[in-house]
Length: 569
Image (cartoon, rainbow, N blue to C red; front, side, top):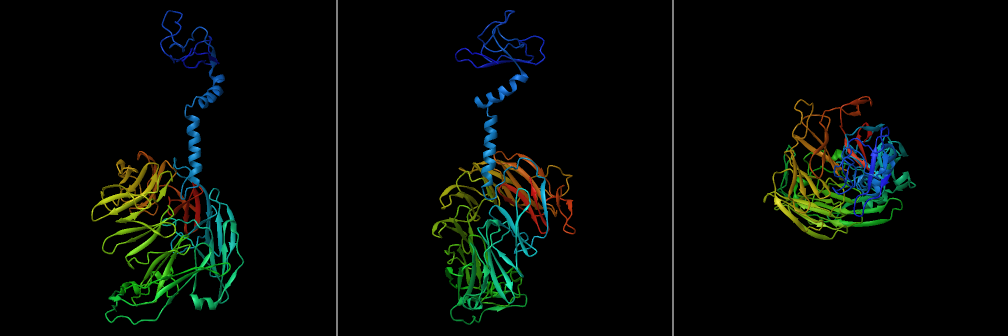
């Protein structure tokens, strides 16, 4: 119950213990209003609130703690104390982070296993190649496509594949965005190849047989982006190699190849076979070292990419396919093509350049021939700007601020920030090499160096807000920590930045969670510390920490390994 306040005074509740012997007495009560008010019965000055000894002023009404509890809860909301508001904001932030690529709903407490799926995760070009399709984690496992619910680990659906399947695009979550609108699967049917397209929910197209005539005309098939099959072939007259081109017994090749054939890349609809787009990647003079048999003459694969025989193969080429970009590389040809057929980087130096995607929807093309520089493209492939140095993008973000690119100019020892179109924002001294842009959270850019120092920079000015040196908090702890570790991945929930690092010879990776605004350690677990993972020998769960790669889907964090997947929360 409450007393009516005087005009301009606070609304006052007089509270007592439920078992108080006398009404009007509240042990430990203090004055809550100003000095003016009714006097205490013994003559002490009063106020509009309770007196310091707990007796209520004349006319005050008494409410017990038990009776006051629900009323105070309502009052907290009505008067805006912030308790309910903070809870609502946290809930809204968690929900929003579910929609952010790679966002995690909550990283405020140490991670523990919430579920485990045991089974083989087939290897792709990387150790943990997966896809995110329709908000579910999808991967190949012993002749099937398997989709897991990221919240529970339950199998949402499976699709049985034919012999010798190859599905894509799948990527390592360490390096690429695994989201894709569809997976294209090539599989054997006798001596022939057929293709199916798998979309969200496991919806699968009818198989389409790929003809030998198309292979002879357009090239061998390869899984492509956005429900396509890629084909590529060299065109133009064959030209002899220059006389000064030589390869020694160790496989090193010298000289320059000045003449060669262009490469035509074609994307056809995987379901209908109709052409979506076709581009020509022109041949450019290149060093002979770029023309060995590193790539298959038909299409690149992991086996061919690590095979260095030293023999010249001027027709060789390969490709790396992502959901929105195809990178083509080979003897005298290097470029990227968007999923809609826009050609990027065809003028960049072969062997000394790379084209990548931006989370903002555009692309970047870096070259390091004479001067390191980065070209910026919009989503349609049009050039929007150029930045001196090489550009690094945030490994994780809460998407609350403007898209930010960090550029490192090593010769000038400068670190600069730019808008997505290349517009300069700030420029500061580069403290050390090996910079990584770990996260963009709120008004803070979190970066690290090769020495292990993590810094929080003001996103608008570049001013240093905080520094964490990653020193080992416990010299007796087993395994590596962050002072000598390399940050492999980072995630954020919009307030906390989680760093996953490896180093110091430990199999298990260390984790540390930092407050993005202050740099304070929220929680940590050194590498080699306790944690549940899957024993590669028998599939049983053992205690040895995080050993696989992490991926966030729909706000849920998961660890992916070759013998299983588990939820962390």
